[in-house]
Image (cartoon, rainbow, N blue to C red):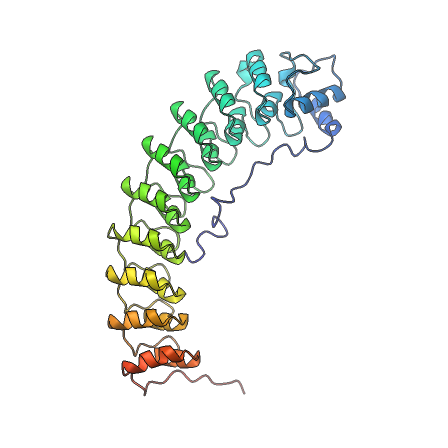
Length: 385
């Protein structure tokens, strides 16, 4: 995962699309009111467009003593986003009005806006625990997703609403529900965002620890990639597969290495992973660490049996990568493990060629101590005539 899921899902756990809340309601209320008339199935005959706009505005502002009495007809009103008065009240955390509206029309509790957002989804997204309890007690569907497949539990996890997560799970929300867009589960989202308390709660609810997203990345891979040490520990203790392979054939160990998360690397190594597995470019964890100059990680990997004489598909050997990094300690480290001092890259350059070319004199001296073949030549590049 050289740039793991950067375009399609690189940071999609951190930058998941946000709900486009109330885009019409943010415009002048008179504009919203005109659309409310168009979509309402039953309008109170005593209300004009301005009165409807004022009612929606009061509810969204959290006002509980409304100028207009709440009736069954009012529950049929919709704004230009397709939001009912109930949804607006939930989104605003207006608990008293929510309670009144639910009592007036309990059958509409699962109705959604134009984006598939129900009252419960809004409550979970906003962390309104009392409203979640109220909606669930009145029969709200706990697993009803939005148009992108995210359930109330998924949104509560994403927003780090621990109490909401707990309440939804107690209401038998599906702990392994997979979203339709990226194949994410609540555990993957919580792990990727480092929410250890929620991870622990999901594990207690018997979630599938080794479930993967559509790229093959598991919760452990995401936690390791982000350097979330406590979450990695929780997942490993709960049976996470340490050698699971995700996008670009990367493992948790590779991604922790790439992020320079030494503690995560050391923790993963206690579970005896395959330290010599390579990604789709032929890079091992040691190859990555040597390339990026991470001496401490190189030492941990070598002590765990990482091979020093491996080459990626571009012709880069671990020793040549170490030389390019300019880190003399890594160069000496791999040489002490009998790295081939005469290895040549795709341009037939030896480690000594590279050290001299980059003016790394200290590394050149280290290499010369090992008596390399001084007769080896690199490729001659012909200039265009």
